[in-house]
Length: 149
Length: 149
DNA sequence: CACAATATTATTGCGCACAATAATTCAAAT
DNA sequence: ATTTGAATTATTGTGCGCAATAATATTGTG
Image (cartoon, rainbow over the protein chains, first blue to last red):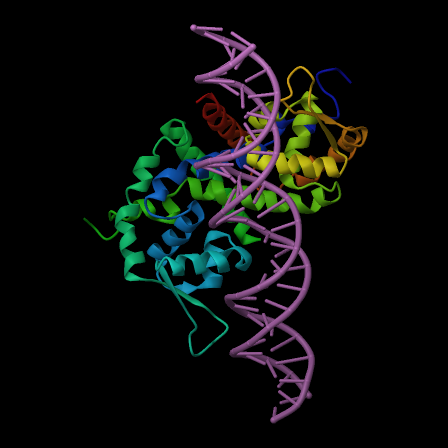
């Protein structure tokens, strides 16, 4: 066994795939903070709002599956969004276990401010156009397979 | 403007690059939980230990730059690792501001268990070999550019 | 109907994440 | 030598993240 190849090579940071994934994700979320501050949203809240803007009213469970968050994270987050009057939380009569999450008028109209966020985040990941496309394809594919499990 | 292309398209979840990045990273960290439990480490602690196994003793600041964590996260995390007797935290005489982080014997030898983690995480991202390589290249490149700023 | 099993959300507990700020130590400049 | 400024780590406060568990409502089965 040579110097340049030991049994510990597999735990070098440079040889990890998951570490740059983890670190990039954190950096990106951090970069969103400023522009989202103007909307009064955290990154996670922004993701939840995007799901609601696109799909409309749904249960907490459906929402959680869409954005990859469980009830332990989502329940308090939704209460905060309700307090900010972005969403409403209501129990349907037919099934009082479920919690329907719907947008308030204010929440719905925040959409018009939110469309300014993606343009301002252009270049937040400093890669060429082709590389960004390729990266998105790979991440979408990986994520989809995780959802299928 | 047609139905299929509105000004709100840019805030559809499907059109985000950062969302699958964020979601994938979370899923991956979650998958590490089980195997790391046997080492008594969280994912973030594991990353910190990898940096120390590879580079040896360094200051908190250097460590933080390597793993992309600031003092607000790192300080309490290092105290927990010290309590578990994985690391030592000492102030050098020449500069009492700095905090040197070094491995204990126990921390050093945990390395031998840790080498089993990457193999057990093979397939944690369900992509072909070539796709994994490409993904790593793109993420490394993106992360490197973020570090350069 | 009774009651067991399931579905759905809420709570708890611990740790990460980071901005903002404070506290301490060191270095530089007059 | 004193003071100013920079470097370094620690603390505080808020929110995310998730496993484990609890609480409640519904559904299915005898």
